[in-house]
Image 1 (tube, rainbow, N blue to C red):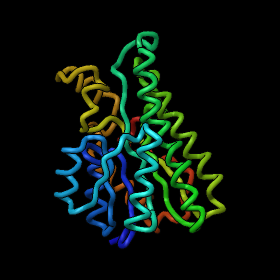
Image 2: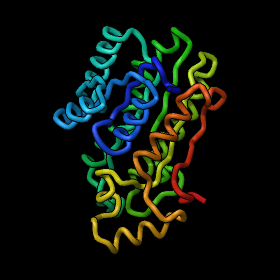
Image 3: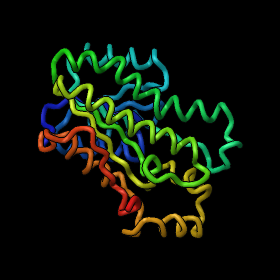
Length: 246
């Protein structure tokens, strides 16, 4: 029960890593507001975990404002925010990524973190406590070819994490990130450019430990960084990648 009585917001939590984090945080006693754009799937997953949910597109300022209003009306505080929502473009040469694809990747992966800072941070500063966890990627540390703008968005998130951490430390707000390697999530097919055995084997060959990240791996890492056990850790990027970045 390391997160007992903590109010946690997790974006992109209807599937993949976000769902795994929500499951672990539920087991550790946190009350969660699960956020996702997929209304049907979000409702199903949140009901199974006996947690609250809020349908929102994190790339939109209006949705973030409504989310903030909902949380403080019903819970009156936020202890932990996990910026997990993320998307990618399909593998292709950088010049072939359309402007629409580029904007969508940065609006979801980067601008959502900006909105977190704009709308949630003032409340956390007022109470001088809180934890923000950004779900980055090994792509932001060791880029893969043909995922150029996705790589860049995750590199932005890593720098944003460190910048937020140093600015918010005087307010006792910790900010960290986890950097998973590609995992068993709905995005895996997009990262690999297909779902064949050959493509999986090629991808796995770059991970020394020999397997993909799992939602459970992310849940365990996130739980530690968001718990009081990590009270002296801020501005770090924890690689949960089976050795991918060595």
